Length: 167
Image (cartoon, rainbow, N blue to C red; front, side, top):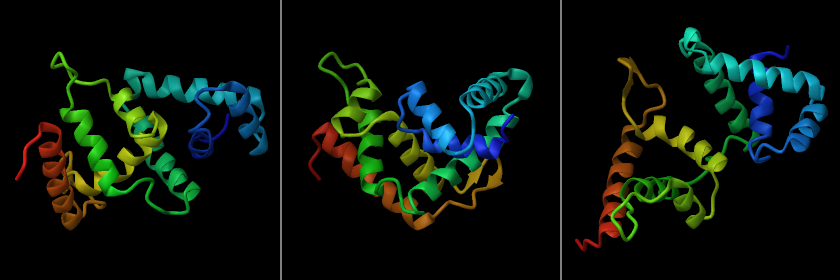
């Protein structure tokens, strides 16, 4: 069984494979992991993260490792700008179809030239930075009050745009 650290690295490397097993196996093999070992690890960690008895422990261990692997893969740069993150976030929250129903988030992503894995990376990067100074009663070390204030102003601007409000 591969370690959770190796699993996180492989998952980050496979983010754009769209579940294509042949592509996943090629990436795993290039990293010295056999297709059989990759398949076993994927089943194992998916089951652990889905198991209520695990109480989220495996997922909590995995996410920081996965986010660090993503950051290494992009050379430490932002996965998207704060402006892009805010635009997509606002459209997901406020856009409606002609019948007044919330627009499917996949359509919002496509309209903005992105996909779900790329969006999840943007969201995972920016949410802790602009979200809240505390998470579950614990200080959030990634929180940046200046960027949070900028995000709030950008969100208002985007909400106004979506709702057709001129200020």
